[in-house]
Length: 337
Ligand code: NAD
Figure: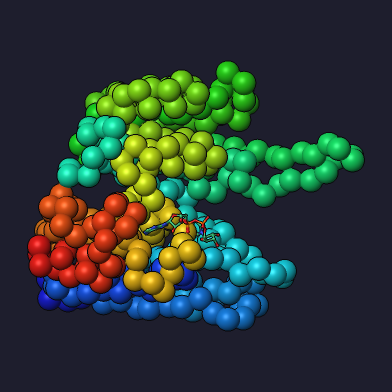
C-alpha cells in the first residue's frame, strides 16, 4: 500500500474529557503527518432500536468497515431500556481481548523504573457475563462462564502477541486451585496453545501470588494472560506501578482483526471541559492503533515525542504534578515532533 493513501479509522471522541483529549490526538496526528483519515462518530442522544443503545448502527458499521478505530471514554447515561455503551461495543464487535501495555516512563519517578508488562484480558465472559440472580432471600448467585472457545482465542492472541513483539514469557494468571473447573479449563487451553510456541516460556501463576510478585518486583513478568475479572484488577494494579490512569493505554481486539484502541480511564467528569485532562493515555492508545496498522515509523515518532515531553518535565498536566493545560502539553508534544 502506498504511503500517500490515507487509512480510514473510526474515532469516537466520547464523553467528558473525551473530546478534549481526542482533539489532542487529531492535532498531533496532523502535525506528524500520520496517514489517517478520521471518521468521527458521536454517541447519540436517543436509543437506536437496532442496537438498543445510544450508539447507532452506523457507528458500529463504521468500525466493522474500517476495522480500526480509537475510542474516547463513554459515560453510560442513567435510565432503563438501553445497553451500556461499552458493553454494546464489546458484544456487537466481539472485542474478545483487551491488551494493556504498561511501562515505566523515564523522567516520571515512581517506586519502579523497570516496569514493562503486557496484560491481556479476556473480554467477553468470566464473572462479567452479567448472569446474577437471587436464589432465595439473603442468597444470591453469580454465574462465571468460561468456554473453551473464548479461552483458546485469548490464549492464541497472547502467544501470537508475544512472538510478534519479541517477548520471552507468557504467564497465565489463575485461581485453579479453588476454581477448578472454570480456571482449570482456562489453564488447559493456555497449555494447549503454549505447546505450539516452544520458543516462549510458559508458566502458570496463582493470582494472589501474582499480586505479591508484581508489587515486589514487576520485572518478574513479561506478558500476562488471564480471565476477565482478574485482568480488570491486575491491569489497574499495573497502572499504579507507573503513575496512574492518565498514562495507561489499551487496545481491544475483535473478531476478524478489528482493533479499537482506548484509554483505560473513564470520562473524568470532575475535570471535564476545563482543559486539565492528561491526553497521554489516549495518545498512547492511538500509537498502538498505528502499530496495529504496521505504521511503525509514525508510531515511534509520536510515541517518542510524548515520552520526551514527559521526560523533559517542563510541561506536565496536573495529575503528574504539573501546571500545564491539555492544550499546552499538546503543543509541547508537537514541538518535540
Ligand atoms: P475516571 O477514570 O473517569 O476518573 C477517575 C479519576 O481519575 C478522576 O479523578 C479523574 O479526574 C482522573 N482521571 C481519569 N482520566 C484522567 C486523565 N486523562 N487526566 C487526568 N485525570 C484523569 O473514573 P470514574 O470517575 O469512575 O468514571 C467516570 C465515568 O466514566 C463513568 O460514567 C464511568 O462509567 C465511565 N467509564 C468509562 C470507561 C470507558 O469508556 N472505557 C472506563 C471507565 C469508566
